[in-house]
Image 1: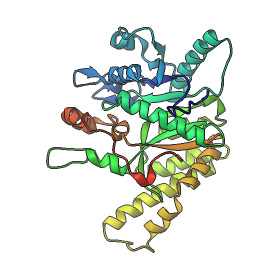
Image 2 (image 1 turned 90 degrees about the vertical axis):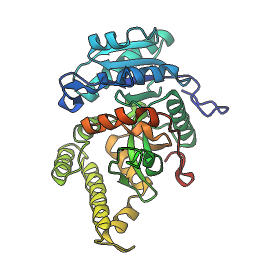
Image 3 (image 1 turned 180 degrees about the vertical axis):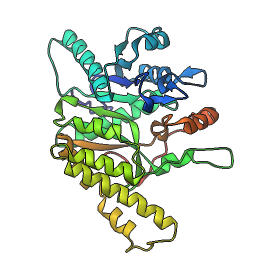
Amino acid sequence: MEITETNQSYASPLDAIVLAGTDDNPQRMIRGENKAFLEIGGKTLVRRVTQALLEAATIGQVFVVGPSERLRRALGDLGERLTIVEQAGKMLTNAWQAIYASEARYRERCGRDDPQRPLLFISSDLPLVSAAAIDDFVARCAREDRHGTAPGSMLAGVAEEVSLSRFYPDETGPGIRRPYVHLAECKVRLANIYVGRPRTLAHQEFLQTGFDHRKAEQWKNVIALAWHFLGQAGGWQAAWITLRLQATLLAARDLRGDRDGGEGGLYHRLRRGNTRQRILRACSTVLGGSVRMVITPWGGLSLDADNDDDFQVLSRRFEDWRQIGPVESPATSGGG
């Protein structure tokens, strides 16, 4: 798919895939409910995400994969651009069910397949998502594709500390503050939005492994994740990335406790080595395709309803936080 030079976005709207989980996965549950169907501000989270996609100028068809009967009841009135896809298993399996549906529709319309056609992937539990944030992210991905030597296999959205700090606890009420990935250039958290060309990734199994163990904030979980990686062909690089970034995070906590301070301390030595280029090169090798990082200034794209505490905070602060716009650091704007 080509990219227009005039608006720096893709020539055609992207199909979007919404991952709405399953009704029997504990990781997708809050208060015994699939997070996609929790309500904030009078709407289910999956409806908020789907409506934002349908309102975005950069999005064409929307494919929502999950428990289909419940999704039809929640979304069935949203029009012909929406396709509901029945769940089939874990995250990666469900994603492929939606990818197949998107490919079939494209094949029927165009009479051919296109493995280079980009798709947008997004979580269903993002109450602060907006059409403006989606359009901005897609435009940044298109710009990154245009500037690269080849289109990216995965363009992963991340939010910087400067945009996420707007959602910290303050004198007006509770907030959300989560651990960061400490890169040499900046501190970031994964956003729950990606543009990808899944047919160009040679080792997609690492995506499911990483997703299954993504809440690895304790050393025992980190080691378990690294061990899982080592059991897969070429997984030593994924294990190395995991352990190095976790060691940097723990060293940062020691630094706040006045241990190992100074420019020569362990934290600073580790962080200086965590360059964006180095991490992305290793990720690209592990996944068997070009992985890029695209910074979004919309911090709300990183704030999913991760657990009951976060859900309560998001519910309480929703009306205030939905007014927060993009916050960008000039030094790190763009992709990588």
